Length: 239
Length: 239
DNA sequence: GTCGGCCCCGCCAGAAATGGGGAGTGGAAA
DNA sequence: TTTCCACTCCCCATTTCTGGCGGGGCCGAC
Image 1 (cartoon, each protein chain N blue to C red):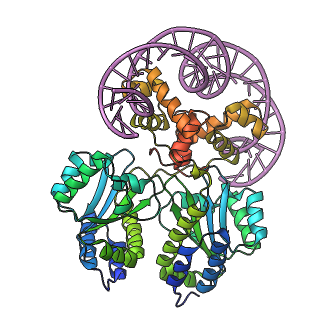
Image 2: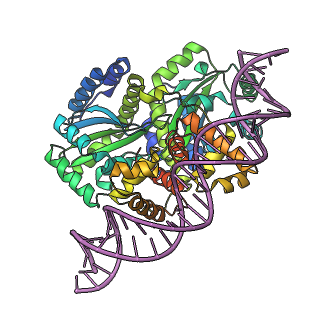
Image 3: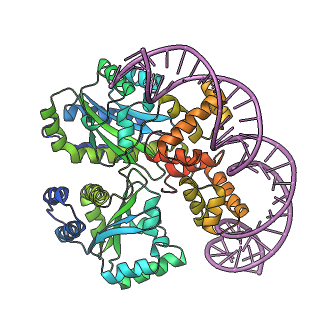
């Protein structure tokens, strides 16, 4: 399982991929190269819609979606709270729903071993890169030990490609804020009231208001909260 | 520059590191191994305080903090909006503040070339891993091309260690929001007024208020705007 | 040399959000 | 089973925000 894999070639192919189908084909090749049962990339959008590709059976993917397993799957919730890759054995399978999910998964052809890598994008995009296999604990530990780094890189590259292919909602040219506007937005994002911000910046509350309105206008925001949200997601302020 | 680097050894040492000093020592070794001028890990915390280690001079680090360059540094804002590693040349240095910052940086011993990797943790932790050097464009392109993958891995491992060593305020376990709370926060972040949110969710405005207050409490936020900011930076909602 | 951006200040009135009470359902976990 | 949590609804008074009016000075670019 997974001896002598040369990831470099595949990653080179990956960097030239431009469509969903290529990624799908690529992940199948990687699955074969690593000699595991399944390899899956699964993007979970904050709004709940999902995107992915991989080698799970269509039946299982459909069942996962139908049953809304996203809200039950300990792999998703576990990875969402972690940074490092995680072996499925270390997740919390104690709830009844989780055990039912696992049983269902095994019946749909998944292996008993899994290893998932959480990965995140700038606007909170969250995805999982998972390898799944049927084997004993020792063999699996050796596999993950040997290929952990390659898997991290693959997760990274797949996520980058997925975000390219599926840009979602970016592409709005962020209009820069003036220094004072940045100050105002930043302090507001930190929870200061307008009065406090004005005092902190040693300006009148009215002047502050002018900045806020100006920033709101530049950001195309409907109110202050909206402006803060946009400034944050566009990286115009950092808190 | 950077020929025949064996990252594996250093990464092995990295996984056993347990203290800030070890990380500092390690990054210096890596800097030498890669033969670049500087190598820096820089964590920007959700509340604006910073942590890091690396090979920039103390004078420059101090100046960066004193002058609050965090709010000006195009590397930070640029990486914050991206997923893939970025060459400093591709960032937007057009603002006056950015150019002044760059001039100051060069005068404090930084090289003209830089390559930074954004990296994110589960609760919105955001960090940069940067290599900096003084050389021509071609040599630099070759360097980043050759070592890009190693750098990604190093960024990943350093970030993992930094989060271990410095739980910081993430020691406040990010209390999850209930589905309704997420709905409310999300719509507010999109600019809806409370009345609109209540109508959209088909609940009374009073009920909505309970959610907002509950979310505010869970997030330790002082007001709604603050709550939205925290929810966004902690990745609890996505807009 | 005007024009636009940024910086700063005042007053007023209406709209919206906040903070403090209270009360009841249902479902899931311990 | 009991306890906890999510979810739903209501009134009150107060604070805060928003929108509109007016004014001034400084700088850099066209």
